[in-house]
Image (cartoon, rainbow, N blue to C red):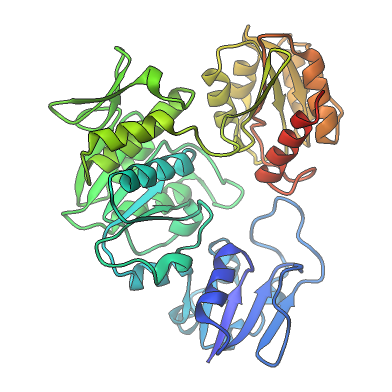
Length: 452
């Protein structure tokens, strides 16, 4: 049997290793990579000679790299390559009958029904990890996989009946997806990935698939404060439970987090280490999901009081000369930059800018010029646009023109005073100076560590 692999990333590489060396492979990718397997009688690789422009995630004009993939007996494609395949093969039933993703394979073969899926525009990783940690602390056998970094095929054979699996699922993985987990969780949904989806409706439709294929005894958890979240959960025939509203978990004005009706006090907000209202929302989402599985209050409280968050999400990197340096490189949209600014009460030196996703930035600019902002360092493709908008609003404490992270951090340090924070929450994607948001955050942390 010959297996076609479309796209060469974490997910499709896991498929290559899952099926093993006994099969023949045709691996196709838009551009060359240095981690392709060696070509042999059983492995062939093809790609376009010219690399795609930075920031383009799909729909290349030249689809010739896909030539011949339809002749394979089975085709496993990366979730971001599906639109190229749709352009190339249209409604060809013979092609789509043998085409699949690692997600289809996982949902069709996994031995347990205890699946918890988490989606949303931001907060998926934090919420998924919290659910995983709370279930693990309560004594459950539990796995964490998906967009969080571990491929679902890497855990498929290990998962046994009765185990729990927490899945972080994005719009790409949910696009036209025909399966839903037992417990589906929708966080806040805002405008995102409009460079890939044709419009916001298509983006929401993708997210809806996390709920739409549930059964009556399944559970649909949604954010009561977000219309899109309510909308997609409404597609589920299952039991619907809001969070940030009873009977789900709520962060009360009295400074406690409660869950259930009648309510159970779980933890005081001051005992939680995560910063910001957005993280209270993430905690409440995770707690609402876990409460449907276990009500082990002691283990839940232990996790919530010790969890410090994920890397590159409002991560405190260092305190130097009375200035705190925070890495929020995961903040790749204007709305997430706003959330990060609001989470910190100290005077701020902001690092803003990157590659443009075509999202509106007016709200970010308005938040950035509030009294708590001492200075702004603009970077990347959108730096000049941000600078002009700031100047138009009368804000002129701006530094710009840097093309490497040590200079960016040095400029921020020069502007900061004891008691301030330096916040890298750029509000944009990282293409250009950096490979991705992780590389951007890692370079920031290295530059901060090098300060003397």
